[in-house]
Length: 187
Image (cartoon, rainbow, N blue to C red):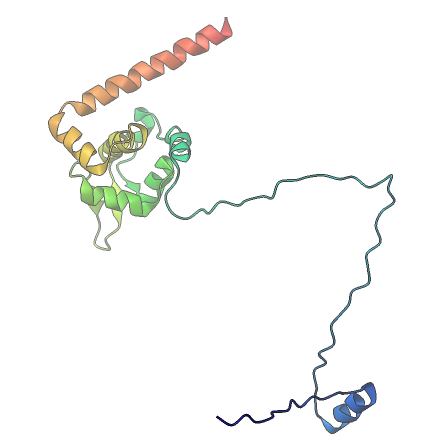
């Protein structure tokens, strides 16, 4: 291979030449580094040094942690039976707000569990009856509070046909416990 001398071409544009190029319509970008003036430091007596930890923002995508699920499990806002059974149907958005979950999760649970059978209109909108909401509450309890898998919850519902009654009994006992704790606190 023949070694050739390659030379590098460099351009040096001065201020006068830049103005001349601008009048002709040629724009040349200056490659001079921009130097910021140094910032003045506050006097030593007013200077406060703090060591703050960097704020790490956790992603809101993906699965929630078990701690987050535990905290949300108690935030279910289902009205008492007298109020719940006053209406015949509830829209999927209202039911999703009651449980604090996405509508897509309710549709998924509907496909997975046979005990949830909301009515659908011609348009395909789901309307949940109060009994469906009670069944959703049971499923929510199995999956979120007891931390069963989908398959485990299906097996539980299949084995325990009286699972609904035992669940209602547990809920009533929890209400009695809360009432007694309130009385104890007021003493």
